[in-house]
Length: 237
Image 1 (cartoon, rainbow, N blue to C red):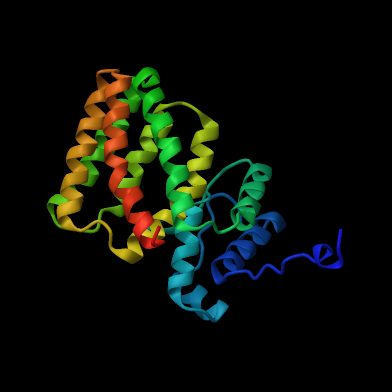
Image 2 (image 1 turned 90 degrees about the horizontal axis):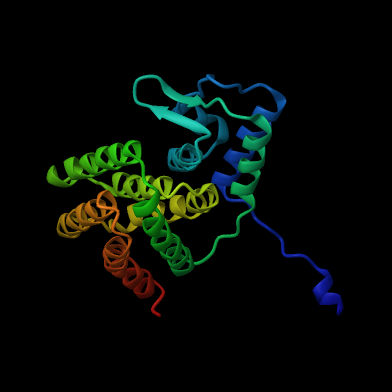
């Protein structure tokens, strides 16, 4: 092995990672416990000396992983969980490399197809209720011409939960937040596309309810075509 191979790549932390690291350290030290409320975005922004967008993105990422819960009335609350598992998860959030957008989307698509296949077989009545609720929330946003990226992804996450595979769910929670952030930034969910997506979601849910795995898979593959094409265009592939 040559001298060059002995050197390690220098990893530069993003502002979001630095915020996550400080929250992790406060949890480890016991200063942040389940039920504790974080300071406001404004106060955190002033304390860290960075823009509120970075604060908001860190909170959204930790909320997606179930570590924090953001409530418009009560603020951002630390969730109750096994502390060792939570610390490990936060560490993993920061250690994950930043793959290109196409790789994220491609990985998501592989897992989505598996998830919908299994969800059609394994879903429970409770899963169906959660899927219907998620779809109704998405439809409400679309019909009112409001941003619906979050509701879109929550519907997909409920499909993953309905497949009852904890590993797949954990992997999806790794790739979805970064995809969601790019979607928000690129304003992917315009009204026409959102309405098309709504119709496809309805078809997917109907196939899951009917426990028709083949039809559910076909609908999901069709639904994901536009996502893959968008990611390819973004990288000029």
